[in-house]
Amino acid sequence: MVYDITRRATYNHLSGWLTDARSLTNPNTVIFLIGNKGDLDGQREVTYDEAKRFADENDLLFLETSAKTGDHVEDAFIETARKIYQNIQDGSLDLNAAETGVQPKPLAPGTTPGSSGQAGSGSGGDQKCQC
Image 1 (spheres, rainbow, N blue to C red):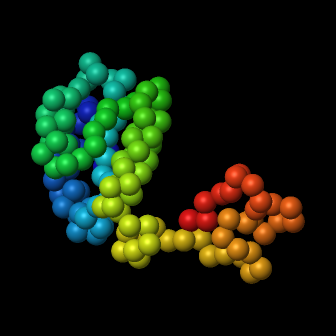
Image 2: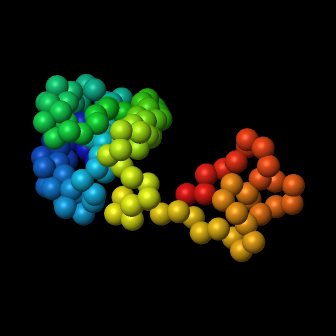
Image 3: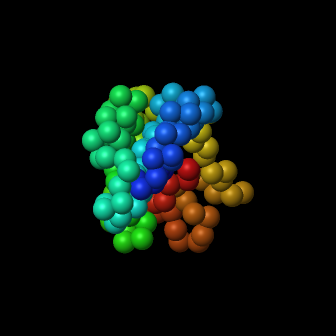
């Protein structure tokens, strides 16, 4: 969920957006709260502390970014991936359960898991995920 740190109205909608997101997703879905426009700190209407408190109270990951400068944008993706991986490791996300939203990529005819279907490939440790 993304809100604009310079527009309180976007922050005020977070509770509703969160309710909608949670009603439409698996309980173990990783939800990240992102305060955008960090490059406009002088125009801030939503403090870091209040947004962080909202994130903590609602078990959300939280980060402020700037799409304009790129500050912390990559961090949001990395932290999301890290949390998903952690959920897989601790068993709260089962990649084999259909309700997780993870769908395996169908194998091409004549291929086996771990092979790419190309001659001379699929042997060795350079295998790609089929999901």
